[in-house]
Length: 151
Image (cartoon, rainbow, N blue to C red; front, side, top):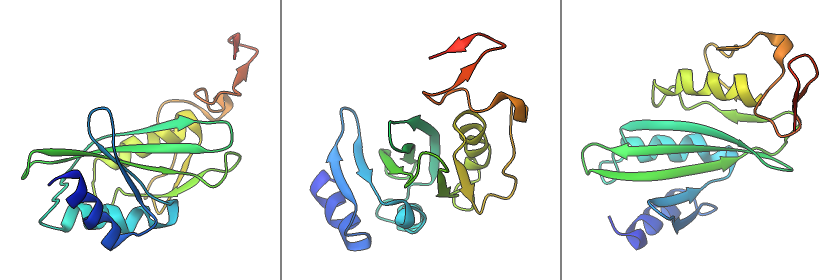
């Protein structure tokens, strides 16, 4: 599927989404409240068949958090990067996609553990590696006097 065809397809599902050619793969930025519907369509529609979540990554920005999903179609041998951002950096919440791709269950827990982004609808939203005392060490404002971590 060409970038133009992908853009047409995405716009038919979610007009608020933005499609651009990234450095390596096509990238789709979608509003957080439309993420789940678009992700489900990307997986279930035979023209895209994004059946494999390669990875899910969180990132901290000055006024929001962002989550990046690398998706692959093993049917079409294509990769797509799906992105969304939280409305709040203080209390970041996004919808879960672990009901779409089961592998997201641990990816989302890792992002929660390290950045504090909660995934609404996740069946087991708890810390994966760290105890509650740690805070969220990948946030840019993280300071830990005991372990001498200062950003």
